[in-house]
Length: 248
Image (cartoon, rainbow, N blue to C red; front, top):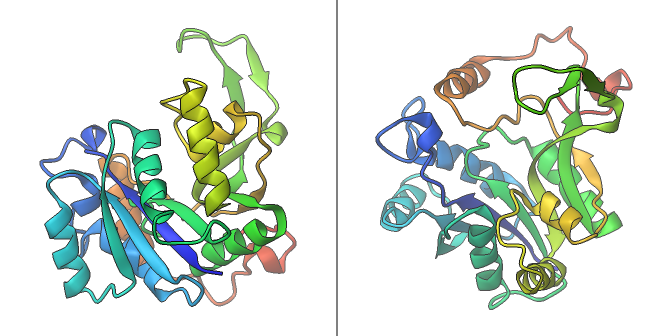
């Protein structure tokens, strides 16, 4: 069985407001996407990496991969018109090269702080349940609104999970799901987990982390830089040692 990381880097990052796609912004002299690739390069169970890349940046990506010794990178695929389209492009390329029962971990290029433990737990849960969605509990109070201005009700946070990536699947299963979604007219689901739900499929949770942030705004870049410099004090227990269950 092979395990492939499919990194989604097809977006332009307009919300970041920068001159280049946010996945190629340098943080401490290294492109964001390289931090992401290094996490999967380092993981002992990842056999290959594929990247769905924004058009025009493919050769830049290959050059960076060579510079930073990302030897597991095997395929670079063109992005699509939206996230679902980009993921499907990547998956359909992978099924040309890998078996249906191989595993694929779909991950946002702009989540560069993904840990080895998160990747490992995603793999474990795919093998156990058939799919795995990295997530964390919802700690904030959740208010319902119709217009974004006022609210007259709340939603129980115990019933909510904040999803992250990686989101892992059996390759043949997720490719079949994407074909069925196209036949059903579903073309712009925001994530693999929402596509599963829209198609009436169950999803299973794996461990995420508050540190596994998605770089969407300039403020997120600042948080990521702080995380790179931070070290947990030796006296501070991790969640798994105090019964919290969520990797921190």
